Amino acid sequence: MFKKTLILLSLGLFFVSCGEDVTYRQKYIELLESHLVKLGEASSDDNLEEQIIISEDEVRRQAEKFYIFLCGDLNRLLDVRLVERAPNNWYILYNVKSSEIDDIGFEIEKSFTISAIAMNGKIDFEESSLKLDLCE
Image (cartoon, rainbow, N blue to C red; front, side, top):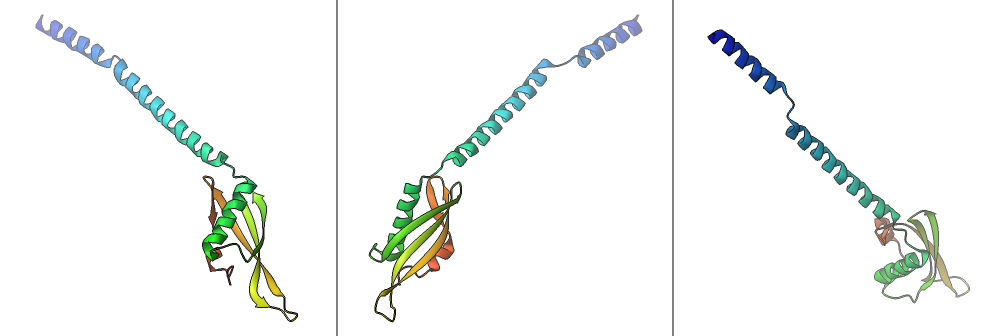
């Protein structure tokens, strides 16, 4: 009799332990869902940064501010021209009067081209543009 109860008790424990634990399964599903939500939020934040497109007027204003930062004023600046080579990717052409004089006695005009990238609504100028002689 003791053997039968022991066998029945062990079979009962075996079947109870083999049953699914819904709480672990549910916790795993919730964890996966929260991870997917976080990934979705991160990708939507990246899309928002890419959607900020800066206007030509804003690029011109920031290009003139950059020139003022380098040279102090706009006295020698003749013209600023912009070419958008890709969305948020610009060529900026500065036409500047130099301090040099040609054979006839007129001031020589020089042109400088700078490549710039717009990020988060601001123009990021290349470091090589700081080495140009825009203000001679």
